[in-house]
Amino acid sequence: TIIRSEPQGEFPDVKYRFFRKSCQHCDHAPCVDVCPTGASFRDAASGIVDVNPDLCVGCQYCIAACPYRVRFIHPVTKTADKCDFCRKTNLQAGKLPACVEACPTKALTFGNLDDPNSEISQLLRQKPTYRYKLALGTKPKLYRVPFKYGEVSQ
Image 1 (cartoon, rainbow, N blue to C red):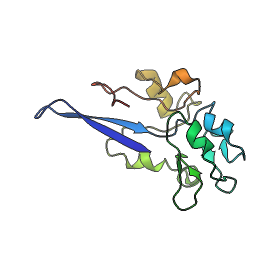
Image 2: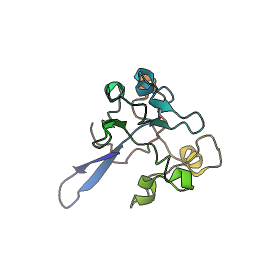
Image 3: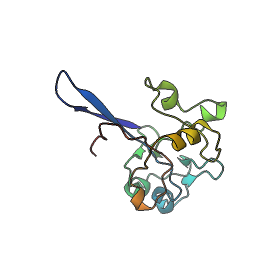
Image 4: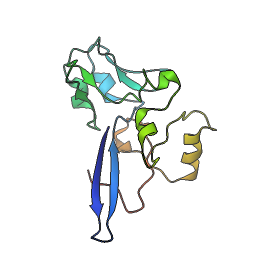
């Protein structure tokens, strides 16, 4: 996950805009489609897009195919890596992803989009939201609540 920030306005009336760049966990993930070994996959049960490092050969096709530019080569394993919502650690232990737990402003909400009573489903019904690069047809699963002063430019 990459957080970008930009100042908005002039001193003393400066506000900061933040933009989180991370895996969108797409239903139609180009990174999964181009993987020659099946290392990149979408978990059918959770919808989380992940990488099996044991199958990854480091070809970087997934990195090139990701329109969100959030994949990278892990410096130690030399395999593709990305946000997996802490699937094998926090989620498996019944906790929230580390980014959600650590966010000092509580700007991140995580939950089951298929459960109409989940906190995230309720939030999506109450607030205007958008999904990043929706026109690409990837069906991203991360929703954003627009910052009232505008988003950070890409």
